[in-house]
Structures are given as C-alpha cells and as structure tokens.
Length: 483
Ligand code: BG6
Image (cartoon, rainbow, N blue to C red; front, side):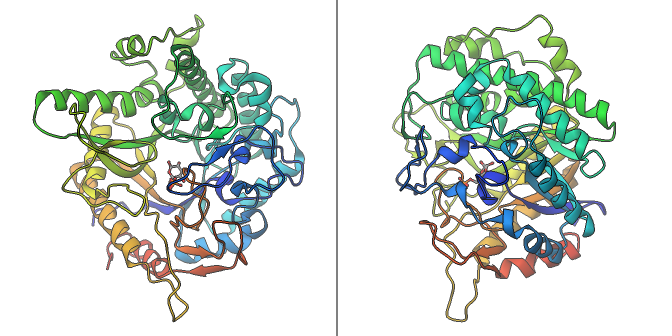
C-alpha cells in the first residue's frame, strides 16, 4: 500500500448528530433542533415551535456531551490520528448575534480538545455542520441576510482565538454544495421554511424568488468562508483551513452525447461550482449560464470578488458515499440518495437505504478533483449506513461494513498511486449517531454501537463492533493489512 507515513486515519462526527444536551449550560436552539425524527420512507418534519410530545433526535442524540471522555478513549484505542468533529455554534453563541460568547460552551470544547491532545489525536473541526443558531433563522432568515456573515466571523474569531494552540485543521462549512439543491435552504442556509411540515429531500418545487434567495445566501457563505480563511491565517499562520464538499461522481448513463453533456453539467453544478469558488477564489465560467437557467441575479458587493480571491482554502475535503448516473431519458428510474440523486447504475449494488455503492467512484473523484485543483485532499466522510443486529453471542458482526470500507480504502490507495496528494481519511459516524437525512438511529455507521433506538429508548451503553478491531489493525499497519 502507498499511504504516506503521516497519513491521517480517523473518524468523523457532527455535534448536532451526536452531542445532545441541546439546551444545557447556556446552549441555544440550533436549526437542527427543530427537526423531528423520520424514517427511510417518512421524511423528518420541521416545526417552528418545539412541540411537547414530539421526538427531536438531536436533543439527546447519543449524549456525547456526557460521554465524551469514554468515546475519545475508544477512538484512541483504535489508534485515531485525527478526529473530525463540529462545534455547535449555539454553544458558543446561543442566539447568534450576541457580542460575547457563552463561556460554558467555550470551556466545553476546550476540554474536548485537551482530552484529544492527551491521546495525540489531531482535531479537525467543522465550524458549521448542518447547524446554526435558530435565532439567526428567526431574526434574519439565516444566510439570506448579509449581516449573518459578521455573526459567523465573530463566532470564528472566538473559536480561532480560544483554540489557536489546540486545533490546526478547520473546515468552514459542511457540504456547502447541498445548498445548490432546494432542500439545502434550511439545512445548509438556515432559511426559514414557509410553514411547518415535511423536509422533502427531492422533488420540492421552488419559485424563482426562492431560488434567488438561496443562491444569494450561498454567496454570503462563500464570502464568509473566504473571510474566515483570511482571519484564521492572521490568528495563526499554521492553520490549515479547508472547504468541505458533498462529493458526487456523476457518470453518463450511456455514450449518447446527450448523457455525456448531462453528466458534465452535473459535475460542474454539483461539485465544481463550490469547489472553484473556495479553492480557486472565483466563480467558474459556467456559473453565469447556470444562474440564468435558475433566473438568479446575484447581488455582489464591489469588494466580494477580491475577498473570494484572498480567502482561498488550504485544502479540499469532501464526503463520498456513492455515485450516480446522468441521463436525459425521463423514463429511467431515479435511485434514492440524500445529497446526490442520479439514475441507477446497473453495475452497482445499493445499501439498504438505496445509496449505490461504488468504491471505484472514489478513485475517479479523487483524480478529477486533484487534477483540477492540485491542493491536498482529505476524505472526511465515507461509510455504510446499515441496520446492525446484535447476535446471540451478544456481538455485532458487521462484515458488510468492513467490506465497504476495505474496498474504498483500496481505491484511495490506487488514487495515491495515480499521484493524488491524499492526506487523510475520517470514516463517517465512527460512533453510531443520528442520521442527518432520516433522523433515525437505525441507520448506523459506527465502529462503536450505541444502545439507543429510533424512538429514543436505550441505555446509551457503548459496545465495540467487529469493525472496531478491524479498523484498529488498518491504522496500526498504515493501511497495509486490510484483511
Ligand atoms: C453527509 C452529512 O451528507 O452524510 C452527514 O455531512 C450525514 O451529516 C452523512 O450524516 C450520512 O448521511 P445520513 O443521512 O445517512 O446520516
């Protein structure tokens, strides 16, 4: 295997999906705290007011807030070099527009970083992972309002300054490109939904005006990200600040030139638009036509272009779960997926949640991205959501997860041999947590099982799955033993 000696092996989580403690020690409500549980077939619901008898999975999640020492110890036992986590913005700024931070929140993350340091685990911190103060949604309509840039920067300034000697790697926004889809309006941008109701992932129609608001809000995030990069480097020049993109490999369904152009269009829209702005510091050549298609007229301040150019990220990180096919044939069925939808690929199998498993797509994506940007890459999410069952011997034999991860790791090795500068891998959901798309616990990713079910019942006890020892061996051998 070709993994460099200093390769950063680890795992990833997000605060809103694992921490719980949603209203303790001064924390305010996050956008994610207003989403109910759902399932594969029934969508999560958004409610403006927290309903007394409704289940909101983020409120308790898997209580990492109360278990972080135990959980970090388990990560250390696996040999993690890096741990990707996010800060709940609302622990630091409960409403979002305060001048001073909530000290208890600041202290909490300091303790986490110190705990990680004890085990020589490098933190990789997502500044905003599908979570922002609900106060900013109520008062400003989230990122639709340009003033939110300053609130975000105030938050960044606090955490960059407080943790400048404890954290080196940062990501400005999780999967910033999901806001290119209409469902990203609330999850990614905190734009207030018109009314309470199901959060449809796909098929939601939006007006031209709504599309305008969404793209404008995304532009504000780009500006905020660029300013954060600049600010971060001023506070500590050694900071490595990256973007985070939901990576979706799009293949042409056939060699019909229509399908080829469609696939190219998808790669541009879904992946390259955000990547280009954040890595190259400017909107790409195809943006103008794309905005015309959506009827979008972007409002830019005179300094925005320069700001984007001055705030280019240091590395490119992405999540990778599946690939999809692009076709112009309306008859072809669509395969299910959270962030990327495509026509089903007859050569691939899908997970129980309909995500098409494609390890080679990871090699393809790594090469496409590295060829385009030539900056270090990190895979910061990859994994298999599955319904794990405890067998009679009291264990979880998750060979299907091991198979999934092994095949993806092999393709990362191929990509490194191809010449790609890949510096790390943080497997998603290293400990079971709440699913972002469905709100379920049943869709588990972890090396560590947490005893909690879809309705919120369980002891919260942690238990190692078979994949725990397997991953420990992978890290021990720097990827040389994948058996
Ligand atoms: C990514 C998100 O899209 O996919 C995570 O960044 C999410 O937050 C992960 O959990 C897996 O998706 P899901 O819906 O299975 O939780």
